[in-house]
Length: 595
Image 1: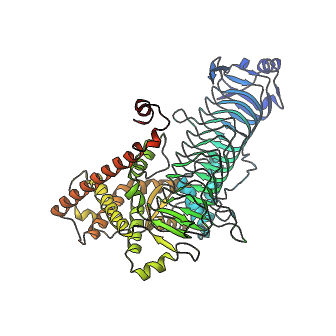
Image 2: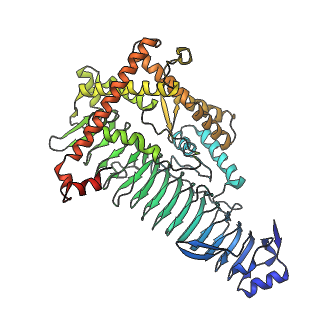
Image 3: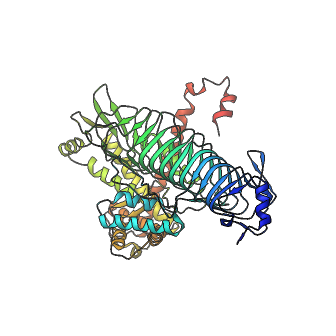
């Protein structure tokens, strides 16, 4: 594939201002246009692919194919490169059709003397550290961070990663069709990229010790150190990232994020938001001024905050470690004085400073913010622009894990008053009152939500037909595990861990293949759960035709309720006179706000 340079070739390169520590170690592809290699300096072994006399366009400016004004040390360059003004590129394998321009230093992981920088996720004491490799999935990273009590498993995971790095998985590869322009420093960063999902990195200050997924866009003053990015992640406008895993389809800009593990579909793009030592399970939004984590409320390293899917802390919200939040928890603006454990999904939580109480309205989204709930149910899948989709994601908020949270919330709300008060006393680490707002309405809402989930799931699986009881004749699974966006039965995760520990899986590829298998089986396990739950709600062992028809009628009634509340939510906004205050006419307002 590569040829040794002839004396004539060496003379051509020398005349064009090139030097080499040893010309014998510099090799090029057959028919490589040597006239397109100018003012370059080569150290160690350098291999260069096919270069032709082609002009490429970068930001509407012409750039010739070739290697110009750059220093390369122990590198392999793919075909059709556009490489201009690289201060130092060392120990990197560059894919085909890459554009690299104006980079201060670009140092890869030297496989002969590897550098192992671990990502200290979820807390600041390093006890959940993971060691990334170029093809690591979000699910694999989360298993490593979560199950720290399994010492043998941790040792095996580290061995698996070392195997991956030895087999071309080191952090020294730039994928095909990647564009990296105007960056000061890239140190041991693997970039996954190809023609279908090209990755773009522009005008970054520093990226060190990390993995960039397919189709990511990073630019405008970003600094990132010890990180793992999924597919289609955007880091922009001065974002500062350290020791963090960020799931697919997420955007982070203008803010600081450290020691966190973020699942897919996360939004955080405000200048003064702050996320430290937190597990956020995706479909989340961090508002401006939110300071989540690292407020040092103990004499040791900070603890952790765990927020299930749909976490949405409002403007200027601050929280204490350790706290935990059920799915789709909305926090009203406030400085929450103590640790929280909110078990109610779809709840509105309010720190009422005037009465010194913590107020919780369970099922708030369903009762009063249906438009936002419906929008959330659709937008995450609609915004999925991934091409490879190697990380599996449950976008539907109506899923088994959320349904089980609702069941637990119903159990709490149905407790006798004395027992309920005792349970509420454990929601906040403090002595002030915790008040449940609209308890009866919330119970009714939760019940409607469960029926909606069950019938919707069964209908989608059976394509509207009456489900066959025999195919679902197993007990209901109550414990579910969100594995980086993929919802899995806890028993399946336990089995997977046992199989790894007992030697059934001996590398990350085998682990990933089993995770794929669980995803392929998920529609059946989800429908099975929905069927078993519906039977429990109906106090029946199976569902006959009459019951199914009655449930479909109730399902239609709930759908009508949803449509009515969506319209009502929008009507409240559209009829607000202050929404019209900045428009001089109704026509102007409609042209801006009406779809």
